Image (cartoon, rainbow, N blue to C red):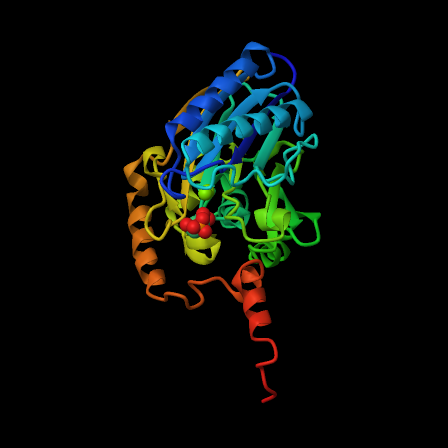
Length: 365
Ligand code: F6R
Ligand code: MG
Ligand code: MG
């Protein structure tokens, strides 16, 4: 196949089963039915429907480029159709991420999360799609830094001449709605100062210095869209691997460390990000702990050969065990920080109302 292919991963929570823990198969069936029709019409080259926790994930390949009106409309209408099924079954939070009434040419800003990447298929094109539940886009900052800038994680940064020049990180300031591109290794310390603040600065994309697209992440913050707390954003991430990019094993390696992320119960707690096989992506304990799955594909003439369930591997058992230990430890703090998020992150939930309720009762010291 000649010409560029686009990989679009568009996701939304349109109803949970049971509560916010997982998804009913009827929603996946409806999504497959919708995308099959688009495939028959030639709009899609291929697709794969999956889920992580209560999030429905549409993984699609096509020739329409990123931000395509047609592809976004297809995803939007698919989510609406699935919402109808969720309503019939009275699934929990039916239509949760459908925050706006009308489609406006893009799903961005309407509730769903989006990661897209347009590229010229290489001789062989191994790609990993990461999908998380009960957390927010800042969860990818630490693993993305390790994968593309830490030589203790990625041996290729030292050994492979094609990677030796390093990578560029496009970072989004979520509040200012502005991006900055920082180059590693030269600007590593500046980069870390920004992306260490995971609630404010999130990595949107990573490129090799010759311009090759390497990673693309969803950065939608639901609370920013809705102006109130409406569940966590549950982000997705696409990473291309091998041949002058980090190897599959280098891309997976950071997830052996279950780092603390924002999310978990009521989107208001810090907890460990637990890497799990597909069938274990059902956050239950205290609505968590947050989960991440990794779907590996070979993209071949636009077809999605796969997925391989990349965390279905005993070498991640240690990370799962550690995540459970951390979960125990963090839970013991109950409603105290740092288990509960800091006040700035609670601005869309209880705090403003509480301050108003007790207005006038604060006396000068
Ligand atoms: C977190 C999440 C859940 C809910 C919690 C309360 O992203 O979705 O932890 O916040 O189950 O849900 P409601 O308010 O719908 O009862
Ligand atoms: Mg939900
Ligand atoms: Mg979710």
